[in-house]
Structures are given as structure tokens and as C-alpha cells.
Figure (cartoon, helix red, strand yellow):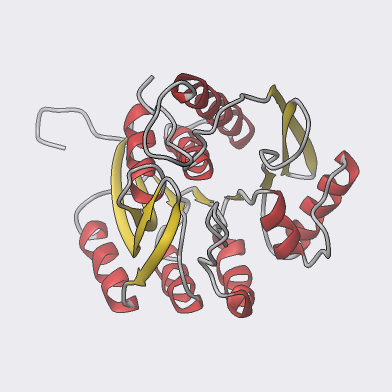
Length: 269
């Protein structure tokens, strides 16, 4: 902010970089800008990926993750945080220590475990660190259906309404304050997202959009929710607006073509 201007509303994304621009830091920053906020970033890992998948990932050091954060934090107010790909238990530990300094700042944690193509992006043996250190600090976690099953210790992916709600309750019992179980991986003509917040379930049901351009959907949704929280909305309202923005971005990008696989959403529709 300069002496005569208005203050920016800021959202810090802590995530991995996607050189193809569809997911990760790049999708986050597009979403934050489209939502009327100013994007800040701390990069945890650099990936080599395209619309066909992730071919390689390089983890940045915990010290450099910390240095990125410290340099931003020393100069710029942070109004909300979105966490995406962390890549390791050490990174999760480092990020948790940094977030403890942001008293009262809303945090949306997109629990990225695997890429769309199936590449592991967080070591399964280190999940306990993620859950113990980051779940209690997050205002909201946003696992998709397969991730929710892994994080809740279930043997199979929840399919029915009751199973999804039970899974959300298990995640809450495991330390998460609020849980949004995303329904994009479910079958049928509707996408059903389930929010557990302050002991109540909120269901958001929308027609499924037929498109192959779904790369970065989870990154986009979590960043959109974080942006709305930064602007002062309550959690159910922020989730509703985040889902609507993501739905419209999917719809706007459905007829576009980029690459030979799963293309990106159209963030600036």
C-alpha cells in the first residue's frame, strides 16, 4: 500500500509449481487475481508436468521455504493462506511452524497426495506429520474422495451420502476443524460436495460438467475459497462462492484445447 492508495487484500499460496500453468502455484495465482485479491507465493517444489501428467518433482529445501515466507511476512500483511502440494513431512513441519505466527488468519489446506495421473506427491509414511501438525492449524481441509479415504484410514472410497458424512466426521475427529469432501471423483450426473462445519453438514449439489479440462480443479477451488475468506465471508459462504467460481471456470474452459491430455480451466472467464 502506498500513502494515498487502498490496501490490497492478500492471499498467500504455499504450493508446488506447475510449468504447464494448469495447477499448483500458477492456477492459485490466476484464481486469486480473478477473485479480486492479490496473490503471494511460497514455492515448496518444482514439477516437470504437462496436461498428460507429472514426470518429475524437485523438492525445495525447508530452509528456502522458510526464507521465502520470512521475506514476505516481514513486509506484507497476509489476509488468508492456501496450502497445496507440500511434498514431504519435513515441509509440512516447516509450514506448520510458519503458520503458527499468523494468528487469526484463515487457512485453506488442499491435501494434495497424488497427481491426477497417479504420481505420489506426498510420502504415505509421513501422513501422520501432515495430520498432526497442519490439520489443527487449518480453517478448512479440502480432500477429494480418494484423499479423504486415505486420510481417514478407510479401506475404500466413500460413495454414499452417509459414507461421505462419516468420513468427514473421522477427519474432524483426527484434528481437522472443518472439512470439505469434494465430490468430483464420484459417479453420476451430479457433483456433490460435503462441508462439515461447526457440527453441521452443508451439501452443495451441481450438475456435472462434461469436460476433459479438469487440470487444477482442486487448486482452483481451494484458492477461490481462501480468497473469499480473505474478503471476510464466513466459511459456508466462502465455500459456496468458491464452488460457483470453479464451476463457471470449468464451464468456460470446456471447449478450449491445450495439450493432449487434461487441459486447464478458464480462470478469467
